[in-house]
Image (cartoon, helix red, strand yellow):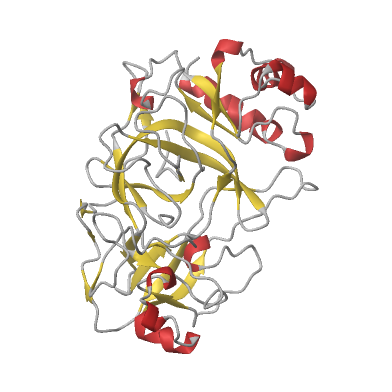
Length: 375
């Protein structure tokens, strides 16, 4: 199939495919990809397929025992109902091991920091380092996420950009923003033991920004038609005056951020997508390299006790030369997804817990990021 054919099918049928109220196929997400796990830029113009993500690929007997339909049959039947022909060969099922999850890191890895330590206190603020919003969590829960990048408004006020669930506590529509909520660096997860006894107001010594706004995340609502959807998990915070220095475009060992990536597009002569390798620098796994394997993704992402549906997402897997086993992990949420020419193509915000079978150096994540644009 051609890229646009699969993309049209996802736009028309995506809601039905991953609707939990009519869950007969075990599919938790769909995207446009190749018939194998190759980079999407290498897929021939007529060799694209629908990639269906499932927590676990079941045998025919297990499907029957659980009252489920083979994901390939479910998608083909839905296509037939919409007068769009899909052969079973046009549908690839990918086992991801768990649901897609978004959440700040709450574990402990003080004994195993990344080679490039992005978890420590930084005198110079920059993208890719650990941050947190301690309000509502500290000291009962210690969390950590990543400063993605920085922007400046017309009045030359500087802002930090990260995920809604990292610095705005996964705010939904109607939930008020408190402009006094502080963003601190390092994250509460990374504070030294001597500072963990501090009451919340005293964490102001680590404050680098104040929460300014976010794009609210619309949660799934089984009673609503169409299903509420989201394209980004993003928030921003105003940088405050402090004794911190600033290198707001310089990633630790990742080079300079040189602007926004061009929208992905299909080459008119070859029919192939024009894409580069990607990389990121994040709080938990520092510098890692990846390959875009799927585009146009529609996935159900789980937060703390609720879920939300995201559309137009990018799916990335680590390269064979990746310095760590996975492309990202919990705590990397908010990391800027950068192209090979150092331009921002998206924001890391979600992933899964186990590897895709067959990928080189399989790791613990297949993060999603909002594309900068699309043809």
